[in-house]
Image (cartoon, rainbow, N blue to C red; front, side, top):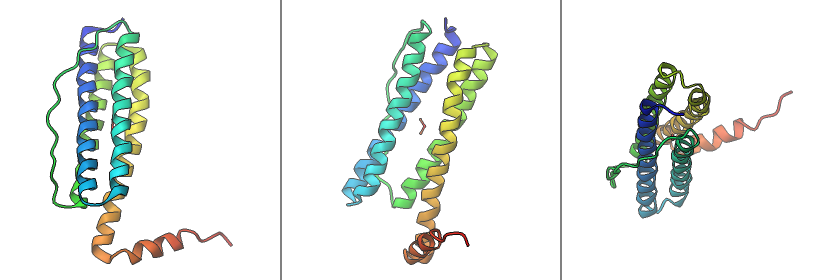
Length: 164
Ligand code: FEO
């Protein structure tokens, strides 16, 4: 059975994952408004992943005989000054999520909750991917800002070279 400390920490994490979903849905709406359906699509996919993350914690608490208790969600931001600002905010937000997953893992160690430790390892791996993807989008947008889109096209062409 899950301990009260672990249960409370995981309920907090459900809130954080659902807030991530809410924030990314707001970013998707911003991109739709700016006529950037590709960026909006990317944010929508991110948004649905965040709901899946929340449900992983939800189901884990139930499987371990705990009680899921949902909390209020903060209202997300609705306006940004640029695409780059949104991307930087996603990267910063994912870094915060990573920190909270690490804190949760520390709690699982202290509580000697071995099933939680195994479950959280999936999230630790997932956060590596999440941070990498966000950093890549920030880097690409900065490249475009500094050198225009032609450098991206050239980079793509060079990336297709076969070995000798
Ligand atoms: Fe649930 Fe993007 O981390």
